[in-house]
Amino acid sequence: MQDPMDDFIHYISIEKGLAQNTILSYQRDIKEYCLFLKEVRQLATWGDVSRMDIIQFLAKLKKEHKSVKTLARHTASLRSFHQFLFREKITTSNPSQHIESPKLEKSLPKALSLEMVDQFLESLSSATAFDLRDKAMIELLYATGMRVSELIDLQTDSIYLDMGFVRCIGKGNKERIVPVGDVALLALEQYLNLGRAKLVHAKNRSNALFLNHHGQKLSRQGL
View 1 (spheres, one colour):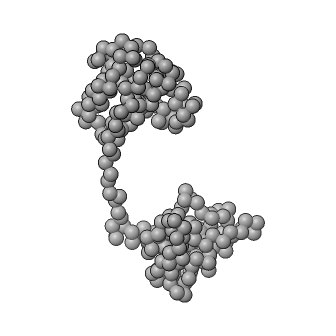
View 2 (cartoon, rainbow, N blue to C red):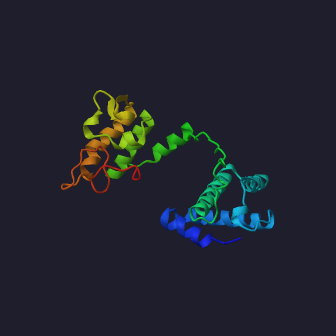
View 3 (cartoon, rainbow, N blue to C red):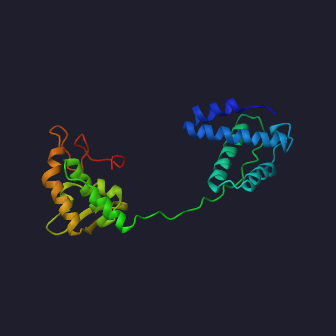
């Protein structure tokens, strides 16, 4: 069988721009697949590969107790490889066209226990402006359940300490009024009174509530 591996790797790295780890995974998957076609199926050319050959290869992996995630990656590798063979006219058809990926198992997120949350909050210091900021952010997230995107989009005029709520913009650009408990309000007050002013830059003034080292709105990555 013709070995188009080098050309395929060039294709997925240069033209498709896949990440290096993905490229290495695809390379391993295709090598294993080629070995199966040659030694087990004893095929001579890529044009001889059928949909059933692919199904039997995936069935072999399943018998080896590969995880659903691994099977899904192998399926993606084979699809990409056969699409490449068809695109380069090495084959006249694409036998992987109607091969379905296994559905990935959806697991529920693991939640911290109340004791773990208390320990985490108690571990937050108040020594610096960044400590005050971090404590205010975590307390606010914990008290309200708001999304990270909603938190980092808060402005200084979004906070109503006397009335005990914050005004945030949620999905669909809809405004929400969210009540805040006393502990989170105290953390916010300390940050506003003792911390935020130290993070403001004279040349880069921002109305964002939570600021980064440059005095600008904190990003999702920063949080």
